[in-house]
Picture (cartoon, rainbow, N blue to C red):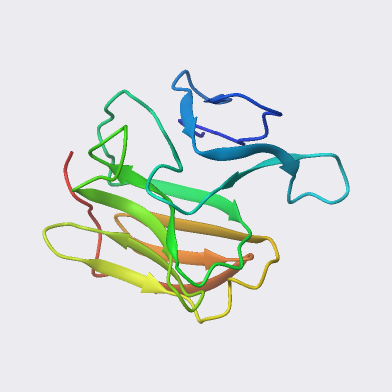
Length: 166
């Protein structure tokens, strides 16, 4: 079961409520209450500005497990890339250390990465900055790491079974 679930579907404000746990996010520099990814029902989304001051984070630390999934919906036309989701060591700005992250490159390539003493990643093809909704899932376990995009397996590695200890 999920430890945290932040749909970021609030109409306004700076809170992103945790529907699975009790660790709400603080949302900074974002527009709230925009149309969400589900077109058959009325869902809401949060639009981040793509700048250092535009992010959502918790203030509490959490031990990073080596068995996890990170999952997000995203929609962008950015050619500047950026982080979609991940762990970091700073709850009020840009982190100096980070792990268990999914990010987008300038050409729309989605990357899932961990850092067990060296950078270990999986990447999708380009073009995911096409202005349509995409669903991404990165997983890590004793079986390895995998990356899924829009329900399809993009890649996997059996040689990476841990992430950075926090």
